[in-house]
Length: 137
Length: 476
Image (cartoon, rainbow over all chains, first blue to last red; front, top):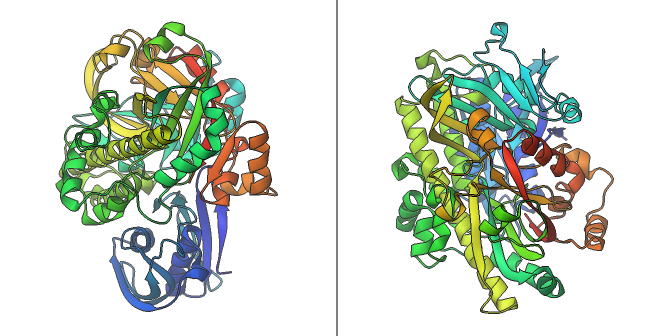
């Protein structure tokens, strides 16, 4: 598992890991979506391009997760894998595989309202990147 | 952290300049509750709220306070309209999340025999929105009207009865809404979700009035012992969530422009009178109106389900509709001076006392009705606003029992089917879209709602009117 769930009195969070920062951003997106739906039911049928720009690394992560959530809840596209093609301090471009959401196969497990800045952490330690993010559910 | 206990109900954290506090924090809680409250970050979060520019009077915490993100849940903060800030996080992602109580012409004894059928019927007509869309079908042009007219548009378009909108806070439509301030993304998320309940702690409960505590107020609200009622808890769905997301991001980008420094980025804010502040408030009002329309749509389909199961003559009348995630411009006495303030209620309910002109005429002698849901296995309360709320809490009171255990902690070692049966043995039928919906919202996840109510009653913020017991519960 590239991520684990974190407790919060009312909501839910996750701690994600990866050897690289782009991999960390990809794993954070997977953590978010696996809280929102059953990822194993999503087919990698189509390829989608996502991009985000923001003020700094922390807000880039929050904005990235809210972008992925908008694809799920607004555009109604379920994504199951991510490749980060470009990442710097303030922008990100990614390729994702997935398919349009089917109400029967892809119901929301838990309706996620948003990713928040609450106790947000992004750290590198001994060659491993770690992020902690809390979601409002 | 220094906490001065005043009378066993009020606890003051004095202003500490070293922490950037501009004012005190006052917490309403019993001594045992206070021990519990100190275990999470909610008091730290209340202290952070006390650092916001332009805060008027103390930062307040109700007895249902628990840790949120940025602001604590169960918090009230009034900001000076001239010099203060507005914080989207101080309203929350679920803008105008709120509760409406519906009284029926049926009694508990009428409903019980056909409860299972009724719950299934409602479950079909009022989806949670986890899969498909809601049954209120509107196009983008109708959405513009919904964003400005709220529940009134729904009533005018066949989704309700004329008195419904009158009996909602702000008449079911907040003035100052500007659809242009709502992003295309927010519209896209919200449009198919009108008339859906949502998941998490949102619910629809068929209940009965178990005991009346203040007969005169209960009579004014049309409530009698043994009467079947329905409590609906829902908000602005994806539309409100996206409005908050958009404006937290905007405020974060632009805060440096106003030289605002905060201990937590989730508190991101801008001056009320800035372009960002005005735009957010216009978008927030639009999302609030969407929420009132959403709860109105739910009421409409609820009526249909009741009338199909019982009788076409069954009456379902809205008692009132209150919001508990909102920022509203109101006039209050602060430091002996009447001032216009923007009252942020994040998990707090307006509770205006008897005589206030914003209360519907039928209820003006009793005071504004307030609904405080407990949990699906315990009870919910009907309160009436009391003069203490205007004197101390900017006309506000608690909004729920307050969460005690995390979602992961409460479900540990439990089986959804067994828990469902355990509740059924106690006369509470639970229907949920997901197993998690039951486990994560079990009664033990929440504080004791009766203790929460006792605090606000004793403190003179609101009066106990009636206690409601659940019979049938629909969870997301």
